[in-house]
Every structure is written in C-alpha cells, then in structure tokens.
Length: 166
Image 1: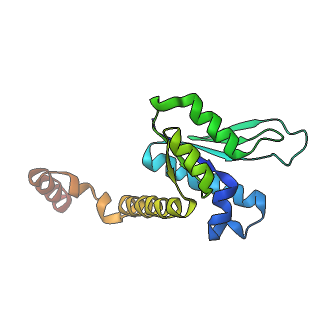
Image 2: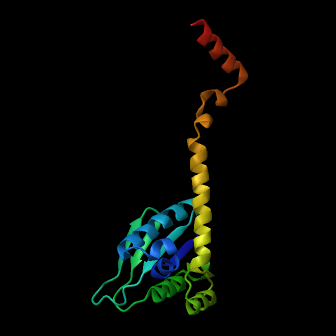
Image 3: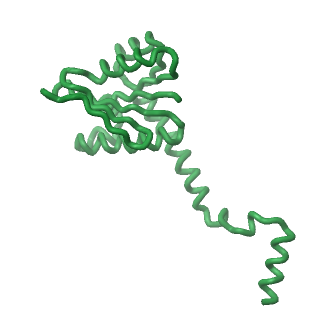
C-alpha cells in the first residue's frame, strides 16, 4: 500500500483555508481532509506535526481511520521523523512525501521517495474531493434509486398489471 507522509505544519501554512484557523482547528481539519483523501486513493496517510519546540514532549501517535497522526518528540522536527521513516521503509514501499521545504524534497528524493509540494498536493486533494462529491451526488440521486430501473421489462409489466388490477 502506498504511504503518503504529510509535513503537517508545512501544509497548514500553505493551504489558505487552513492557515487562518486556530492551530488546533487547522490540525483537525487537515486530518479530516486526509481521511477522505486516503479513502478515495486507497493509501495510508501519515500526518506529522513537529513538537521540536515543546520541551519535554514525548512522541505521540494516533490512528484515525486510515490516517496515522504523529506528534514528534521534543527536539525532533517533522522533517527528521519523515526522513527516518522513509529510511526504515527503504525502497521496498511506494512512498510519497508532501512538503514545500526544498531541502527536504531533495533529501527525500535521494532516498527513493517521490515528493510533492504542498500546493501541488492541494490540487490533488481538491480533485479527490470533487470526485467524492460527484460519486456521493450520483448515489443520492433519487431517480437512480427506482426499483423499476433495476428490473427487466417482463417483471416491470407484471408489477404494472398488478398495480392496475388491485
């Protein structure tokens, strides 16, 4: 299964609908977006938030549906966590890293992962969201839920005859 690592704060600061929110709200909204993204594309998403400026913080992980949320330990950046995780996976897994940090992109690329900027990822997310909305709208279309649309002509005629004759 493809793994997509997200540099959480880098993405939050790049996406206009997230960067103006309170920090906790922006983290939650990003995770919600990633749950939809992961479900649509059938990938595992790992969102990494660095806590390198939080004294005494220990690493913390949460599983949210098909999204893993990681808060790094004290003095560890999201970049360092992602680099280590990519190294552990090696080249045996399909890995993509989302960050706009140019140095990080070069390091990750050298380790065998593909990279995508936060703004490019926004476009990919919007495409997934449009497709999800389109599928949801099609499923909720009342005309598509008619029983008569799912039966052959003979059965339809018999039911119509029963309806008219009581």
